[in-house]
Image 1 (tube, rainbow, N blue to C red):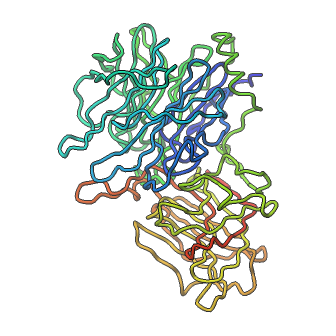
Image 2: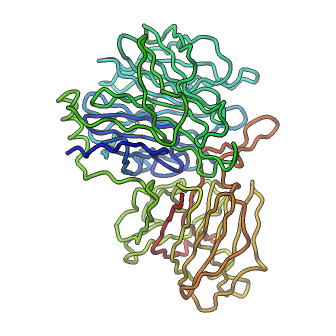
Length: 557
């Protein structure tokens, strides 16, 4: 039964790293798919009945059969997934980017289908690797795949525009040659294409201006699918590029959805910087905006600006189509929605379930029994130590997105290191080159000690002189506090908290700090936002385990 509509949508509706939203309605059910990059499971999914409350469903690509991130670079992996529905099936298009540095982008795209949003998802079908941000558009019995065409040649700007190619849904393959989409001349990148048909027009939403503070969603329309398209002379559908003091910045990469009552909404990404257009520790998040249509047929966000609060859809007055309702009920037989931590409440996991909850992600590999277990010790998460933080294969890190600029993360750990090559603890993590780690290890005499380590753009630091001897203590509580640009670690062995290490610069964990260029070429991108989590290293290769319990994330704002 549909819940009563809440009057206000509070943005971001998906806080923390949830960029490149693809929104879909099937019957009474709304779904959002977002990018996950080097984190498993791939393509994070959320469900809602009212566009206000969103329940996490976990990731769609949860096995190596569906997604192999072995060797995935920082901020590579799954870019800009696209979720659609046709023939009683969900269609999920996604890329797995293995290279983006030095002017090249290796970005093979795939499509997988499922009768229900929770699967089972079919074996992925390779599409092509000509460019990224691929999306499917279903036009009655026909389907088309759209994407940016990447141009590797120096001096060509990296983008050769957009193209479309037919996709045969029954044969599950591309047909014919790609056709270039004819757009008016425009400088800079044009990416993130999403196509819809409305009132006799084809409307093309694109992400323009890059992924930073000049980001925007633009709209063009044509009477034919491949153009020529004309742009809305009114300007961007939504952007914050000329309003640096807005709380929500980087507005862009959008997709449209119509409610069952004929109201329209735009799902798009935003960021909440620290200070005026400062570093974005939380990464890029998902927001919603209401959309109206002008008398001459253009979609408009009323202000054209991202807002912290917008009106929610009105109360239900009936389904748009009985067939849609049946499809939606078949697609989603679950309980009521719950907010994904956006209400500011504590989220504690006692690890009493046989599998990880949907709030957790694992780095570069799925949560398989060879390195992780929720049953070896009841009510505990056991992590077998993995490879070094610079390795692109075999890490043992279980993390969750930072969803608030101020918050606290705590976990109880039991661990018995045998050498300095054994380390386990909690982390504030961005990527292989930017992280902090409060950990238990052993000194040269084999005695357990608590220390802080960090990495800032690849430069390691370890507080060896400031470590805390633990004596015979094996079980302790570890914590970190995030207060805007400042991060502090702490620990407790008898219920009394003590500081661990100095105050740290939290902006090291931001999208902006993670971006690195060398001789004008991209060395490393910053797409993921910050994570907090549980981390175990065994640099001997022996997989020494650490046991974790009662992990809590407490967002403050």
